[in-house]
Amino acid sequence: MTSTVDTFARLACAFSLLMASASHAQVGMRQIQSGDMPITLTYPTATQVQPVVHGPFTLQAAINAPSLPTTPGSRRLVVLSHGTAGSTDNDHALAATLARAGFVVAQPLHRGDNFKDFSHAGPESWKTRPQDVSETIDAVAHDAVLGPQVNIQKVGVHGMSAGGVTGLVLAGAQWRMLNLIQHCAQHLEEDIGFCLNGLAQHPVQQALRKGQFFLSRFLTEDNAPASMKTLQGGKSSGNAEDPRPDNRVAAISLNVPVGAIFTAESLAHIPLPVGLTTAGSDLVLVPRWHSAYVLQHCKTCTTLSDHARAGHFDWLSPWPASVAKTVAATQVRGGLPNPSFSPEERQKAFDQIALFFKQKL
Image (tube, rainbow, N blue to C red; front, top):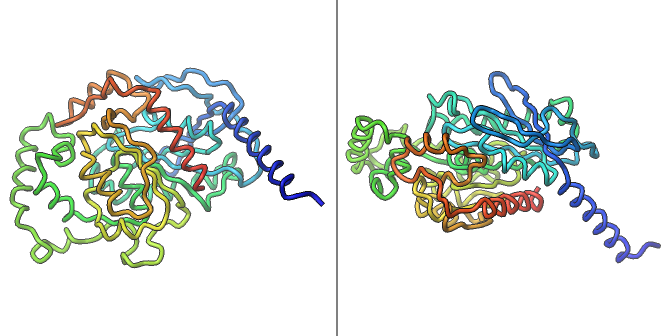
């Protein structure tokens, strides 16, 4: 009879071979559609990567390459939710890291909140983004090539900035407009990068929003309109045994997430593991009001890595200088990357995210 020690030895050897195989994988990439929503798929392949030029972005990928063969249903899926007015290109470095680690990565271009169309950016997009992710999971499941490889019963979701709203809602958290308005009425100057996001070049709109926040100082639970107090996301009851709107989502990774809009009670009810990557020099979403607030109230949340020198946009890679300059000009505070935050440190953080999903999915 085979001894327990021998069995564990064989399992350890098999795991080591699997990790070695994954670490040498190349990065395949192709696109599928779900209705009018493009979805970029990144996955392990044996085909050598080549430079791929998308406008100002240069990616390293093997376009439409065959995926590495694997046992049916053995790969895990991670869905990446980009930030406000974002794209799939600027999260490619993280997607590639996950693909090399053996994951299939799906990146939806969120409807109404992407670099081509951000007409619904903000609260309207926050309401629809989680459904975009669920739709993305369905689309991957029905894909003739990658669908049979993926187990969609335990899916990971990663969200950066506004994508953090996507992730927290899918974890079961709930937000309200009243929380947003009260936060900005009380902390406008301290968190101006969030409260006046994207309005650096629009002084009239800045003044209008500041006036609205000033008047909102007098709003309370008793006198606020019912529409402001309506809970968004999660399930209808904060006491629900499983508040996740999509129970296929099993682990969440967050990077500099929007946090101030969420109720403390719903954060405390999150039932699944959530890992945060935080940036101490983030002036767009000041950690005190966002990442730290989530960590304070969420009992299942942990810090994957903390980076004192990182700013908000340091997590986008590739991030061409021309794009960085254009985006920074729209920010009231904290738009430029921090030159003292190194690509090596960013990659170590991405490796920690991949390890988190390996452990939790």
